[in-house]
Image 1 (cartoon, rainbow, N blue to C red):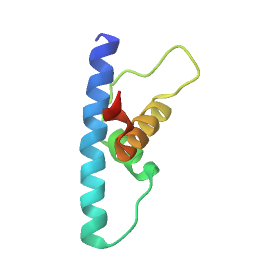
Image 2: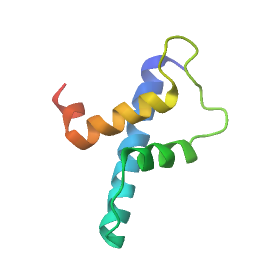
Image 3: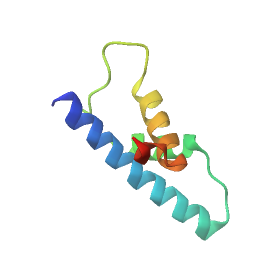
Length: 78
């Protein structure tokens, strides 16, 4: 799978997780953290989902940054 396709897939998965976790938080009145979103994304990834093999960032780091950018709206300003 090409890197751009993977990135777009990870962004879409993270956006869905942000929405799902936020809805649960509203329904239950329990606050959530970015870690909750990261966990939700990772839980739903296929077992064979690629992981970064170069650089210092882990997949978890990437999801965390995407989630923070989705929540802040920064992702949509680019």
